[in-house]
Length: 241
Image 1 (spheres, rainbow, N blue to C red):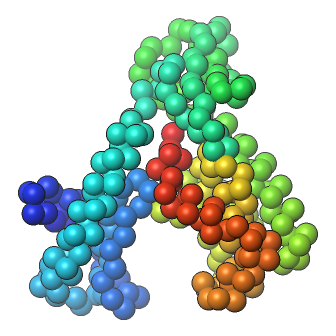
Image 2 (cartoon, rainbow, N blue to C red):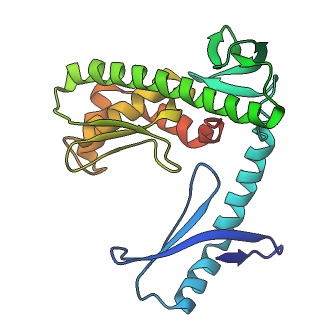
């Protein structure tokens, strides 16, 4: 689905109808993808009216996305690309090697990858991307489990399975079965932001809402949680690879 702005910019929208939706809802994720959700029997006229009413908001989001793209250009997966690790920029350095499997290390401000010198450029890009993801995932598992254990010594809640995923629009979630999910890309954020998301989901084990009781529970462990929440809202576009 596409929506035409006043300046003739075409905005692509992922559109779906939902039996559970009570109203029309529009959101944009950390990758710049707009999603429009409408109740099952909403008329086309009502949808177009909704989009017209939100056109200024859409324009602002498009402008913000374009600005973020300038600040965060697409990766070439060559030496010189900049990534983030615990909130700090690290520069990719690709080192040719005779080893068949790429190895990844972070030292000082360098993200170093030893890559098989015999692979061609396209294969090399895929190998570098996969190696970075594997490295980040491994570190995320280690850090998030550590921070969960640390903060749950304070809260003492019971949870079941912990899963790490690469979600587009969520940094964490808590299910009714007391399963916790986290986005492994959090490893690119400062540790204080990781702590915020961990505590946020832990507190949902007690309060499955965002009521004043929930935020009071978060504040017991993280008095500055609003600062970290703001950082994530304003800088989420940096947490890509």
